[in-house]
Amino acid sequence: KPAPPAPAPVTLEPAAPVPAPAPAAAAAVAAGPTVNQAELEREIKEQGDTVRALKEGNKAAAGTHSKEDVDAAVAKLKEMKDKLPKGGGPDDKKKDKKEKKGKDDAKGGDKKGNSNMIDTEPVSGTRDFYPEDMRARTYLFQHFKDVAKSYAFQEYDAPVLEHEELYKRKAGEEITQQMYNFIDKSGHAVTLRPEMTPSLARMILGRTTESGETKMILPVKWYSLPQCWRFETTQRGRKREHYQWNMDIVGVTSIAAEVELLSAITAFFLNVGITSKDVGIKVNSRKVMASILKAHGISDEQFAPVCVVVDKLDKIGDDAVTAELVGLGVEEVTARIIIKTMSARSVEELGAIAQGADQEGLSELKELFEHAKAYGFEDFLLFDASVVRGLAYYTGIVFECFDRTGELRAICGGGRYDRLLSLYGSKQEVPCVGFGFGDCVIMDLLQMKGLLPSFSQQTDFVVAAFNKDMLPSAMKVAALLRKAGATVDMQQEPKKKVGQTFDYANRVGARFVALVAPDEWNKNMVRIKDLRMEDKEANQKDVALDKLDTWRDIFPAL
Image (tube, rainbow, N blue to C red; front, side, top):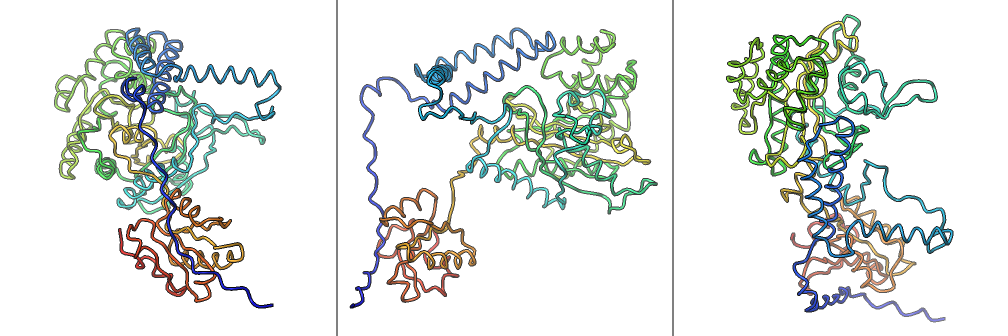
């Protein structure tokens, strides 16, 4: 039999453009301005979480939130719901869903007859990360890592499952009530880690001699990005799981360690486009506060619980804090004096009005602000005597970052914790300082400021075989391109029409299509088309297989 004729050379033409949808009808125009319903529904859900959190807080401890605050939050929620188109709100959707579920249950399943459909929502307080979410998370984490590496910190990690004892040995903290803890099958009391610092302390002690000398080069400068778990009320900026950027310095007694960490935090902000006009960092000293509280009769046993209560000052107000302090055994007059002292807005003012203030601690605060000026980030800092941080192990400088609009929760926080390793058995006091920087609030802030870049999928090549017989050849092309550093989406099933391949390539964000067809392949070549190039005379070329490693130079850069 005579051989069949060779297939004609393939000319790659883009798919016909999809016609734009017709303009909206006049009736739709008359309906008023367009509402971004998805965004509004998200805001309604967040506001609903806030209202529930306020009410639950009052149920747990009466007077935690004022009636005015609760009423204002409820009114704001109602106002947001009123903006929704009729029949388009979350409540309507829930109602429709319930009605549909009732009908499906009556029939013994859903419309497909499936009675075993799982709940597709993640566990309350947790998050799914779809690919587009992962691109945003990767962007954020990369900025965290880049800053840490630029400050010569080393990355470390630890198991998410920790010894419960690590956290229960620290009294006076809410965190001990928020753990995901249980007895494992070996009878050990364990917990999903609620924070990373105790794990760091355990690891440092693991490389410490019996006499208390560390086996590592000091200072230890480590960073991590752990996922942490706390069973608490979910609301905007607070989940039951979150990722947290931690940077810690071990082995430095001077205030220079705190300055270095504060510099790293402000470097991150500037790298993502956030300035001192957007955020500030409140600074205080637990050492100074301890001396003042002791001068007013607060015992060492009362100090940690009192700090936890005082840390709520901005959240629940003077009267509620006073009531909680009285509940801890503090005289009301003393509680009022403590709160007045916390109102100082400069180190000098605190030293002037505070009886018994630790002079060394005051000097450290002054030195910190001087070093910040030398480093060039003093515009981010402000003194705030009410900041004491809720964790009991802090011993010196403490700090907390906030957004200047006041809409969000604390962005990050940290401080000095020189006695934590002693609490865990170290024979010597080991100076430590560090911070934790969660992923939830900062992402809210970046969205609020419009600072998040586009996270669309990016691919260099889609490699497509002309037909099934050409698949092995296409795989070879894909391998050559990947070896040359390209990201390649290998099309596993050849399309009937070239236009379908172009459509797919556009959807996955590919710039180039490499079509492997018999005519070009017989010449040891492959046809490559640049989808971003408008010149039809120049946007496709036949490239030799041994030249694919120069793929970046085939077409001019965009």
